[in-house]
Image (cartoon, rainbow, N blue to C red; front, side, top):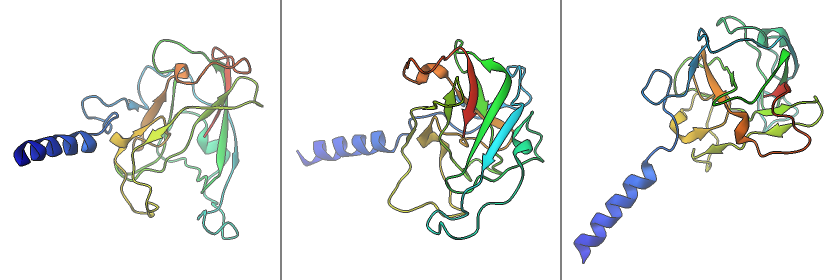
Length: 194
């Protein structure tokens, strides 16, 4: 009986430690899309940015102050960045609305220098610039302690959060993942909020 319990216990440990989502850019099964991919037909043309504090536990401390809203527009080139800080956001607009097609519809880029130094963000979309709808996101990352400034995060534990992939690789999003709502026209997305 003890041997059977040990085998069952080992099998459960394997299941618990298995990663649920796509691996880093460049690995088999990754959903990362290179910035140079011909899949991209347009880039954000406008942006507004609200920068948050550098440390959410100190809301009266210094705010993020690196970069400008313009750095969030156009194709990523590795040189333009804008820091949102903790709780900050960027709202991007497009010359032509994004439509809900087959598969992924758009991607969000971050400037991480490695596959494990990840700064994550929720992503929301709007078809009127007023009503925003968040992608259902999931993370299996531990939450007992905050990941520190140089801590590591495994992207295989993350789904539907911007910043999953290193610089020059976009995290793709499928508008079909958002529940239908009469206030959201998934075939005419004009605003993406990060």
